[in-house]
Length: 233
Image 1: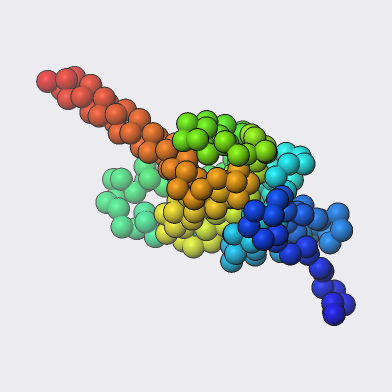
Image 2 (image 1 turned 90 degrees about the vertical axis):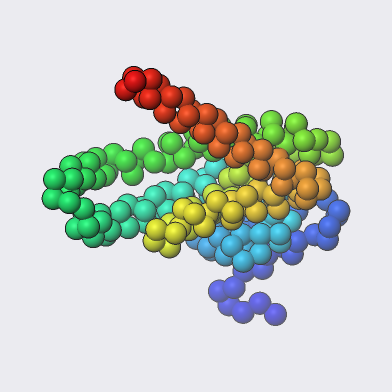
């Protein structure tokens, strides 16, 4: 029996039973935007397997995009709050000659803060599309799309709902570090479910772009170091 004010969500299908009926956010027209958003956030945090089992394989790009923008924007706001809270403490630990430069670098005017918060959703959407494409190509390389019926839309949905990791910004300092393994885990679970592939291939597809970025970043820093060393020499 459903108590007043509660909502009934379709339970996740058993493994191999086909596409889900939609997670709470995808059922927001029936349950309400606020209830659907909060229920989905809770589900992707506490039980990502059940959340992705409910998630539609196809339907639209708007639902995961809007979910990613909302939670990503909230995470950005929390990050700004922690930045203001800690920059004074960090500055106090610096030598006087460096302290002024640090505070000048970290200074944010109300206008620049407002512009950043306005443009954040645009940047989040652009990054989501680009990273989803990179992730999709990675899944293709490891053979994780052989049984997929959702194609790029499935990968986009996996990445869009994985943006729930942006809420790790609530944890000061350690939040960004905690979000990395959490993000990999969500990509792995989501790809395995929506593309109907093995966990091993889904994990490899999630790690490959990150490893490539680390290698490219390392090579770039090595090149900068070599150029600087030759200039001083």
